[in-house]
Length: 68
Length: 256
Image (cartoon, rainbow over all chains, first blue to last red; front, top):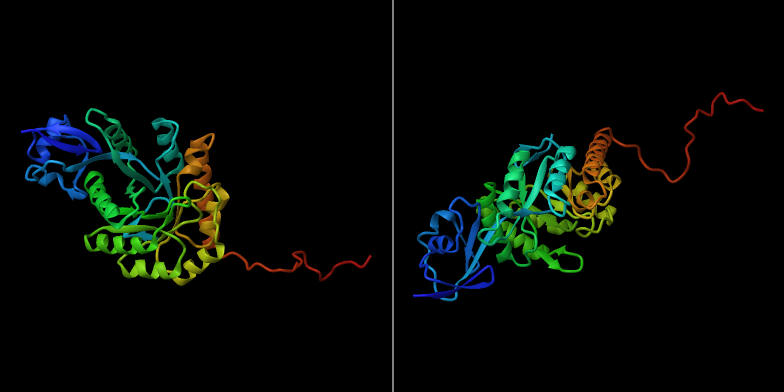
């Protein structure tokens, strides 16, 4: 069943039931250096497979960037 | 020797990595600065966009310790979550903690900063708090577990130099043993030298190098200023006086 999820503030219709499956469905490379949060809370890489998603979940996917 | 959470840095110049004309110029500036630390951040990245991965590869190649920041965070929760994400991505428990309270000056929210610092130090982070030069705030941050302080010189990106010399002198005098870094607002190398002459242990520069006409050359100029300022501080500068005192001996002067 499709769920609507907000990924970095953009709507996505996905079938993934877990955060790990979502990253896979969205085409993130398994080796990519990224960090994830769901509904404002950090989810460690080791816990992504066990982290369930719900309809309307807000997912943030962040990568290294220049900073001051 | 100054230790930042037990680590001695190879240089007292910390360099930001944002706003350079190109990755090549950034790399050149970091090398010419001989930077002891480079600051980095986290931003959203879509799948397939490899900008973040390419940036990370560049930083790894430079082989300089990284200090991730929580730039752009306005609440305790945002800052804490960003710090947790940064720890995983960059593989370090160092965090430059920014919690912004006012958007025109990007002034730190000292109340939220203290709360976020307490949560993060209890979670094992080594917090570098971006703060105003407030003495009471500094005391609270130390009590919250911070072992380094980072007062601003002036608003981020303003290049105005050290806006409150009295405040920065007082802060240095009150906490003589705490490693302290002047972060933000420095515009030219003389500002950096001044911070070092006051006894600050390091300075953090970004815009002043990145937005110079020749960033790599400016990076080198900052490195020299930081070294000169530190050397002057250690050499114990003379006291300032209001009246002239002849430097050439008066005794033995001819009467003509």
